[in-house]
Image 1 (cartoon, rainbow, N blue to C red):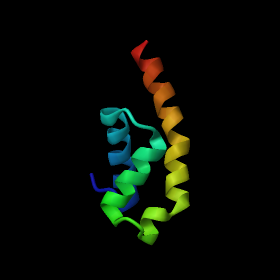
Image 2 (cartoon, rainbow, N blue to C red):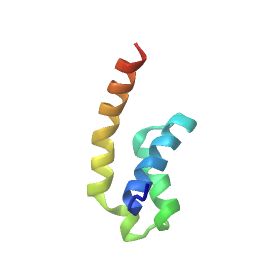
Image 3 (tube, rainbow, N blue to C red):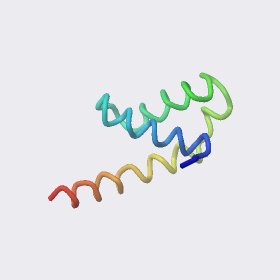
Length: 68
């Protein structure tokens, strides 16, 4: 399945959040800087970041419901 760059960033950030046990914000920032380059306009875009930060709690809630 092919994702755009921000979709790929979201997937990698979520995986980083789980693997490294870091916050969603930290995971997004570090992943965006890795993919797009630190300080680039793409790494600083707020709309994809806020969409990711808004979806993470929903994913966590669904995951918890499935596990129980």
